[in-house]
Image (cartoon, rainbow, N blue to C red; front, side):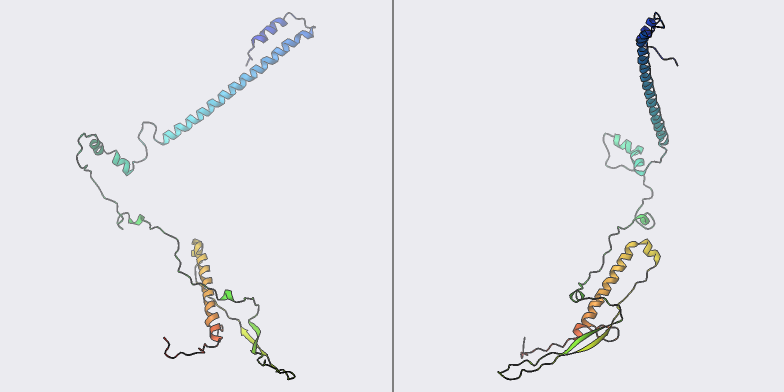
Amino acid sequence: MNAPMTPGLRAAIAAGQHLKVKDGTNLDPILRAIEDNNKAVDARLKSIEGSAQKVIEATARLDEMDQKMARRGGVGEASSQPETWGQEFTSAPELKEFAAQTSRPGRLRMEMKTTLTTSPGSAGALVRPTRDDVLMMPRRAVMVRDLLPVIQISTGSVEYPRQTERPAGADTVVEGALKPESAMAFDMVTVASKVIAHWIPASRQILDDEPQLAGIIDTELRYGLALKEDQQLLYGSGTGANLLGMVTSSTAYVAPITVAGAT
């Protein structure tokens, strides 16, 4: 490929033909003109390369559009996809004739085939009910254990001293008399630890398929334990595997005053 020459380069070459080779100072204008010419050629080549790249990109976009049009059936061609029921209804010749009439009749008669309904023999199997969140049963407030101190143990029994006698000898004393003596006594009580437990059988498959079920089971089982614990703390009989409840171990209430015929 021959590089084109600018007018300045041609003039410099023509002037250089009359120069002597030994006169090196007169070659500077010619070299500068050649350098300017090379820069101009490089700029033109870059412009040509940019234009060629744009042509390639435009060609690729046109090819992509042609492929999309070919998949859709092309412009002006019938679509390869079947018409929906709504499209068949709107494109029916009877409907177009009815719309073109100037004095329209009161009704448009069209032939109807089998109608899909929600009956089991039709499309009823496709109807899905809306599934809302799980509605759990109401809970009773559990608070008896929160009123008591709780400690952890590592043995099967607990020992604690219980007061059995309270000092009750206090009395008034005259000057010089002996002061009355009182007594106080304790005994050691051993209480065996009790176990409150329950469980629900569930397959591994149902727990893997429904993660929410694992959380529901865990929450409900813990609530059941807390509810039974509250009942034992209050009304446990103290025999067998039962705790000794506070109501069971307390003294029965006796009214200090009885009103005859109270209403």
